[in-house]
Length: 148
Length: 166
Image (cartoon, each protein chain N blue to C red):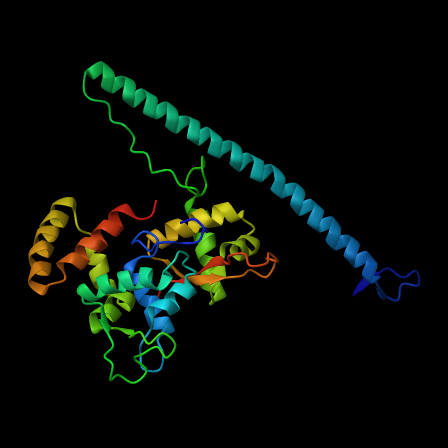
């Protein structure tokens, strides 16, 4: 990723996990963050930098990692712009900060290629039951491709 | 600083102070000697890296020629998409990656590539490439942009700052 100013916010510019951690870092006392705030932190250029971030937030909301504040939530509305904030769901927090247990990691590291394929098949079935399939797709795509 | 000197009356060694300027001279000489020791090692490393790159190229040539002789489709090495960072350079070594990561881990706060370059004595381009790889491996994360201490440009964009991934 170059040091040039961002005018968009794709998965390869800032990963989902990075974005969720920014939400955690910059949340106000009510746990809410505003799209314009993150656009300022990342110094996003263009005509509507806040909208660029809001677009990614909407996507994370569809995946279940973020949720939108309601008008009645304390600290949930930006006083300047009047826009509603966003907050991390339990799933979002788990994606941002969760880690595999050491023993699980060692077991997975020790798997041979055949077992890995069986695991992938099992994972395919399991995630579609849990409704996190699209998120897993993104994680897999990011892990395979990366930014390089 | 004191040093022992022999005394003519045989009463044992007497202690004479060493001038601070003499100590500075010793330090300067030691620095120079270390720099002289380091220079050939750095040159040797660069030479070995160049040799390794040449060997890899030859190896690929042989594989391609052999595949052509066997009539099987040649296996092309998948090229990475061009990047504006580190153009024409190969990936940094594992040691460089570890060094860069160690700087971030020790700092305990967000750092820009320029700052890490100074701390690890690496070029900014190398650090940027390392950061890119470490972000891909989810070991570092972007936390925003900020002005570096030595950046005096008016209205210029700050540099990206990174920290260790939790």
